[in-house]
Image 1: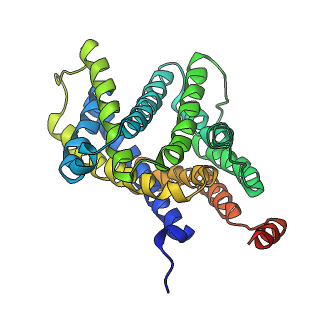
Image 2: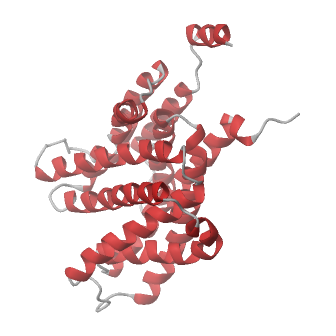
Length: 303
């Protein structure tokens, strides 16, 4: 007799890996979005609103029957989604993209802390061996030659972004205990779109003057279908069955996908730095799959 899908860790981890592939692709598409000259808050609002409009006919029954707890969870996740985007863009006004991307990736290190705070979960010992490998890999991938970390205002803001992402990863597991996957996918997007739309409205961001409208909406559709809806469904469903600390390590391979696609699309040149960084991150993911002998015996005795 075959095991149910929720008892197959490999399948759930594969879904999370698929989510990171879509997120990696979004870096190339977001580069195109930035070149159109559209306001960041307006872009976030339009992207999430389009995703909601596409999903709503399919999820309407669940949305209509959502409880107050479901809406509360959607609000929490929506605020986190918005804060992650806002602090990342705000921080980049005062720091370099290399520093910003490395510091944002520090959320991987913070997830064990937020998991302990919210879920009262102790991390596997192998995770603490994997995390330094992840950080080293991300450093190699994202730091340009001659650049170093300088904790100016931008870097401090970006560190706040990393903290927001660590709470987002942990809160999906917490909210997923009582809220359906469909609701955890669509409700946060509703709130994030409303928040970013309100900010854009009051700051005069909803203007398409000088924007390449056709290119903008074509790229937004790709972002809506894959990184937003596709990754959202994969993450909301699978992460309920994968510990947050392990999920965070899996998510770091997003940088590998992003760099690979960047090379394929001609945005970046292949280099030793690229391959070394990717190898370190893949090694970190493999380390999380190692079962410690002591841990195994303990689990067998408890059965």
